[in-house]
Image 1 (cartoon, rainbow, N blue to C red):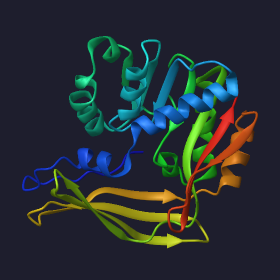
Image 2 (image 1 turned 90 degrees about the vertical axis):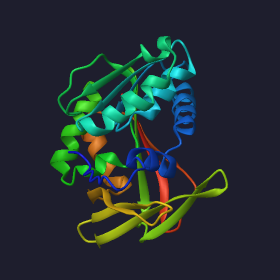
Image 3 (image 1 turned 135 degrees about the horizontal axis):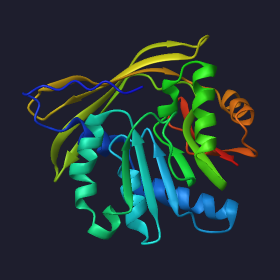
Length: 254
């Protein structure tokens, strides 16, 4: 259950670094997760588990935010984990880095200490296209939480975004373009196929840097499967609309 990564020697920029710049805001996510847990449980969360962590920037930002915090980052794909160890974990002060545990493994089968928070960002759980597959993961996430644990799933409502290209600049100069390509969308089955491409200032293109074969889950479907997996209260936190889609966080408590 990994994203596809295709590289070329002619393309010098790191796809992982470009992806992070284009779509991730780890400090904003960490602040949101911290406030959410505090509002629900009336105390600070200590151990955060980041499932489908990729380059685990959120785990590193979590540990860097407080000497009391610990993080466990889990992913099956070794390539983003290598990038995260080299770029993000290596940049942390030694005490903070020691509080981040990186695990290469299947999020459905790993056995780890019970966490206060299990978080899934960038819709990664959409990789499970069947109810049986998603249910199995949700049961595993439930087992991975402590007695006051909270699961947070980043998702979308509405419709998947159409193909679009965004340009980014650094130091006032062109840096790269990011293209999200919606290759196919079946509203009946909710199956979404998409890809991300990058282009550098010299016109060199990295196509299919990341490819996706997703199910665009409805919030009501997720809520039903969460309750069947043994979670208690389930709620939705809505973000600001972005075109056809509405960012949401599905929050479930033990």
